[in-house]
Image (tube, rainbow, N blue to C red; front, side, top):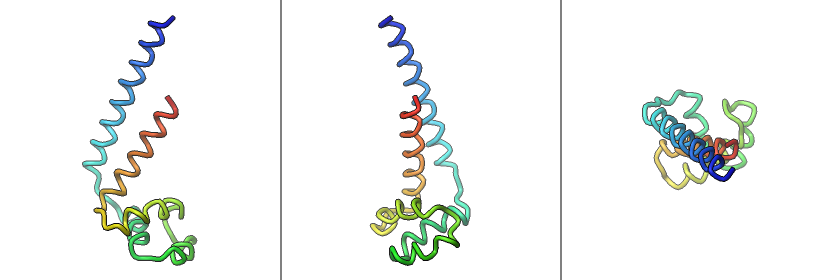
Length: 97
């Protein structure tokens, strides 16, 4: 029983690594669209209250924009948004597995 569990975990870990490689490969080759750039620009230029006022006009949920605020305000490059998104996707798969 213990060996079967180790094999299962090894397979799941291999799948996770393969998924992570594919996600970051896609991230590297991804070109942002306007609806993806809007939350980044909003997080970078607006105050907290302005972000909340734009909720009805924003193309993304307000929580996503608020998650981007620390990265955008600290001057990190735009790719930080994609890395955050990929990291959240990989963590979600870890929880699923």
